Image (cartoon, rainbow, N blue to C red):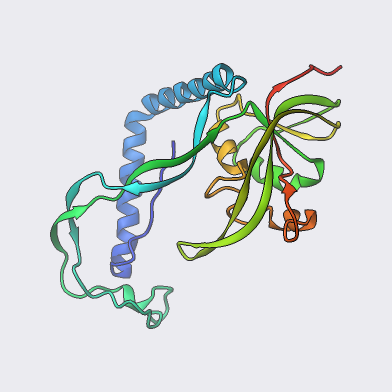
Length: 260
């Protein structure tokens, strides 16, 4: 369960401050009234997520989205400014970090028939594993996973796992919403059985944060660690700019033996 609040850029500085005050006040009132219900919904979602992984991950039948787009929910009427937004920024207002171009002209009015483009629709999916095995030298990724409350274990003994390996044929940059995002061309090969040494990081997806872990670690995820360039340097060191390389994070379906 997440809550996002963004300061409206089209209002005066005073209105921006007031809007945040009004929003946070309403949010605290709502959570105070519905707190027990919200906790119950969150617990149920956690339990359902873990059950889905237990039931479908090892068989390869569990799938999850790695890409998507926003589509229309239909037309709505909104209170908005019709004009007064120059395309090219001018300057910051004196003593503030507010760009002058965001100040609208006139008064807000009801604008009817606006497409509500907030319906998220998946366009590309991938099979969801039981977990991921991350080399010990990639501790920098583990730190980011743990920041997101994703549980990560360290193998105390070698472990054999059956899964599939993603082979990267090309690494390229694609401009998305003003940012240069990394995209990997390639595909999964397997199944295969590999042995991983003690010290390897293990992300078991039978945990409440399974969806986040999957989205961050999948090689073809639009907005995960790959997309934001966190593996660029590692892939370059492996030689991706001259030949195909193996994605260093192994996607496993099941543990072949339980170790010692």
